[in-house]
Image (cartoon, rainbow, N blue to C red; front, top):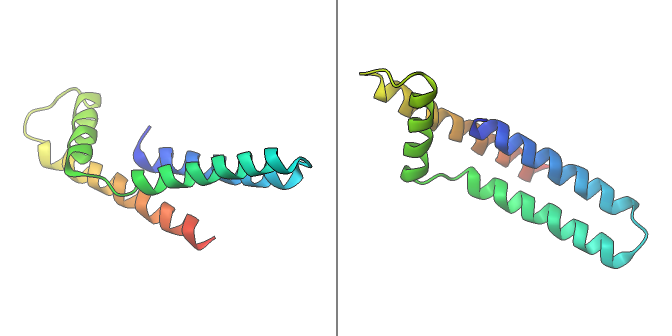
Length: 97
């Protein structure tokens, strides 16, 4: 699963939990569910701002998924950067909601 998919999945979960909290009658349970939804949003924000090591690790995963071909390091690095950039765009959209 690439970063964009991971972020999209976490955003969807956060929205589902936020919606669920609105239906719960118990204030304490509602608060806990809302807090968990906020925690998921924090994870999204953290995933959307990668370190160089995270990009390197994702590029290596992509390289391995493609059979470890020689001479395509830049291609996989750029793909990893693109995935994180797309994840960051999704996270920004989440903040706009």
